[in-house]
Amino acid sequence: MSKSCHVDEFVLGWELTNPSSLLLLIERKMKKLQRLIIGLMTGLMLIGCSGKVVRTLAPDTVDEKRINLEASRSYQQVIAESKLSKDKRLVEMVKRVGMRIAKASGEPFDWEIELIESPELNAWCMPGGKMAVYTGILPVLKTEGALAAVIGHEVAHATRRHGMNGYAQAIENQLATAAVAGIAVLAAEFYCESQECKALATIGGAAGAMGLAFFERKFSRDDETDADRIGQIYMAKAGYDPAEAIEVWERMAQATGGDGGPEFMSTHPSNKNRKQRLSQWLSETKPLYEKAPQKYGIGETIF
Ligand SMILES: [Zn+2]
Image (cartoon, rainbow, N blue to C red; front, side, top):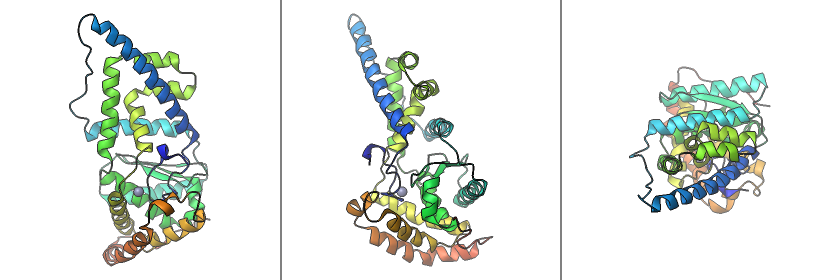
């Protein structure tokens, strides 16, 4: 299990125990690139010492629009490098659930969702509404309603702007570095050995930095609780029985068997509370479900 690529804790311990090899590759390449940039910066500063001081130029602020733009670029990159599922029924299910949750959130993002063919028990939503579900999580979830619970949770992280400071910082650092070593991206073209590294270099450092920050993110427990609650509200508004969110926990716990994935078993003693809270919130979310224009219950069975 790689802590550096931990995604978020919902599927937790599940959610992202095994980052894709692509991301590991990108991470390794970024580290190499960073070393190269440091080398370039040192060179530039030595030149600078003969006359003026070379300064890093950081932008005043990296706003949400910029974060979403870089997230979108990172997303296109990840999707381009991923194997997408060709299972029509599952792709259609993931897309309809994603779009129903998106609509229920009321957020005017430029929503997108893809089903990635991968054994990982994973799902995520980037800032700005770019989502992905991995095929590995589907047999564990068992129902469309459980999928809605997971997507609802992930979408809530994005709509509630969790982790935005971290993303802004990553982009700022990258822009500041690029300002000093303006030729870094160009240099990376020569330095890169693989197609993936070259592709990352051509999309620009900020998008790569944003992507890495996203895949390294770790939310606070408060953010997780918030995402649980808001996610359950979204699924209810989208027409899925919110009680199914409670079941997700049972299935995940069974699938992971209490070890391996469940890093959360040791680091998150409040899981019982989490399940209890989801049950308590039914008093709020059930009425929302009852009022939903269309009701799907737990939806289709996945397998
Ligand atoms: Zn989460």
